[in-house]
Length: 230
Image (cartoon, rainbow, N blue to C red; front, side, top):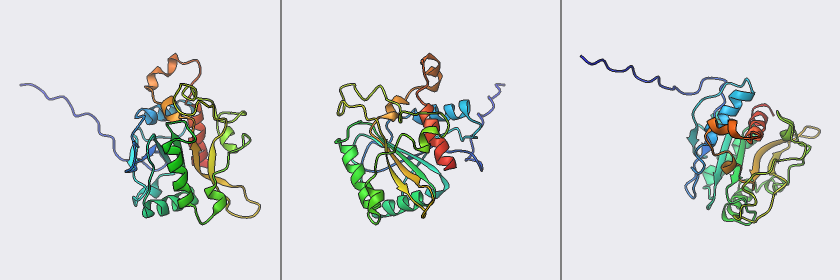
């Protein structure tokens, strides 16, 4: 009689204290581009930090009631970004109560469709506070660049910025929606916005990291550590 192989262990839901890599699904564009990013970033968190992590990516919509269980959201794509009123309201509440959205433009183009439509959504989402909606550049002295690894010159360059796609520029800055809780208190980033195409830069099998001269996911560690501690 043939014996059946034991079932593979099932991964249950996240446990308390585990970091969860949550990806935003939005109906208007290619939200699921760069599918290996989560596994690679999670591997780096395990490799460099003592942070407990949930080993699978979670996909969530901005209008979900479960949105506020996650301190970090990743969003990417090339195409149109369009939210509905409930999604805008949920996102604004999410960032103002401690959550961080990292939005990365795969077009790496300040005038591309993702860039123009995402920035318009930020103006709609934070229209009540014009200084937040403007998304100013993050200074290189910001705590984001020293949250774990040190990046004194600001956001590291990606290999995709000068590859003939996009605006053929190296963007030496990131932009942000920053919430200032009160007089004399430091602001906290609620949205970090990139035109650098980190998604494509981090979209490789984590086991191939050993072939790279320098691990390009280290900046992702900074973003996550900032999201979890700021």
